[in-house]
Image (cartoon, rainbow, N blue to C red; front, side):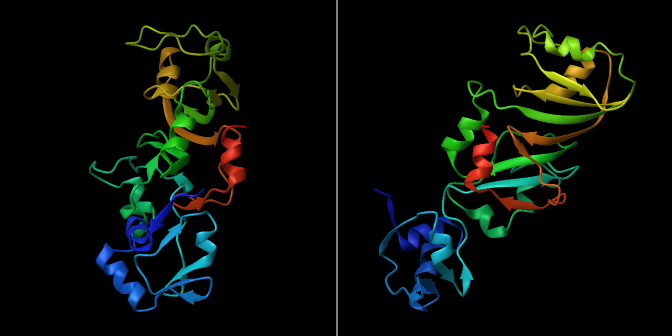
Length: 242
């Protein structure tokens, strides 16, 4: 059986205003379900995925109910944080989404100077499934390097013996594919701090630019421009674990 919520609480938690403001919207006839204006802000209803297709607020389709997942093309210079100075990734989302409860969070982080595929969700269970070390969800990056590859980096990364500076546990095996003398594609299954940059530093190189183009088997869509986002469907979420 689906969990039900009071209408005013559900819409308030989705960022449509305070409960008092939502109650006013209902009394004005602005909340419509299946073509019928709702009159009772205290009514209970299930926040099922199809609610976004069935409900309108002031004539506009309802935002996705709790359990939403988003893919975003993170641009350069944007921080995965709610509080740090400068441009923040959450500012790329609709204003109302930033007021939702439970809050939307990034699934892991990309550092300020890394671009590419970033996932966000308000579903805590989904978030933890993706980042859990037990899941071994792969992340693929394209690194532009300061110096030409020597030729032995792929073998070193694949050993499962590479140590990062300041750590006492070797990295899990990673797969590297050279794309040119100074560009390489690297797939890792861990999420250590600045891992890809530190891996190349460990073999005597420096990452000048870093871009993530895949999480699991989910590719960054070619038509998703930097700074833009898209809701994820069930197939997209399944691909993360594919």
